[in-house]
Length: 278
Image (cartoon, rainbow, N blue to C red; front, side, top):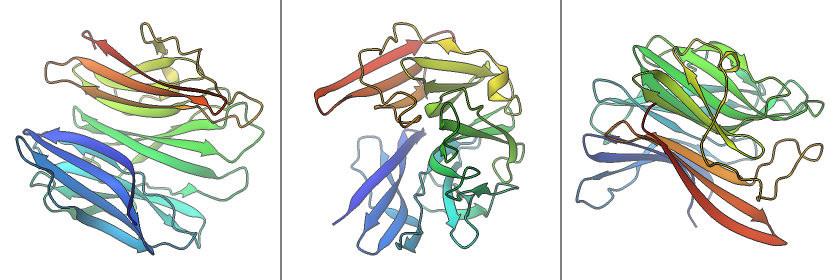
């Protein structure tokens, strides 16, 4: 039985490149598939794999296109003996057909995964390139149950095309962030994310500007109060939704949010929001 989870997708010269985590019997794999225009999806390429004892964490990959058309693939690599996770980065120069390790342990300092208050349950990685820098936002759930909101993020920035990442900040305990995605525009980076009942964006002129230093912009027509949320002080992090963002070929920004109800009042709704002014 094969299970596919946590996809991310980019486009390079009319070729779609999709990275995902693939779990099969006894093995957890980081894989990529590509699809050229007017063609079928190609066979999976295994970039990394590991046997699946409980200690093997999810890879939760993210993709980033560089100006020369090469593609970065970033994924969590956990060290259970140290209770720590880092990010490995692979690079493809042939539209996802082959991959080579670009940077092992690209974070200068690993992320604690201890079960105590200093640790995090790491979720998806999202990153983008802009003006010589790569911004990476990692969605995480803090293990500190005393926080107002455990749903948070870790921000990193690279001036070496993703070779090494500097730590910028972790979200404050009173700021709820879920399912962040990163876009590159002529005006800089835009990070879109879900709060408890709305979609928000923040515009960063530079990857090294702390996310928390810039004001949030509420996306238009984004009232999602009708969704059943797991509100504090229950889980402090669970939001019944998912979200993705992208930049169209004409520069239009798109955010797609899918929201879910609870078992007693099932809802399954999608919203697409767009911006033509970055």
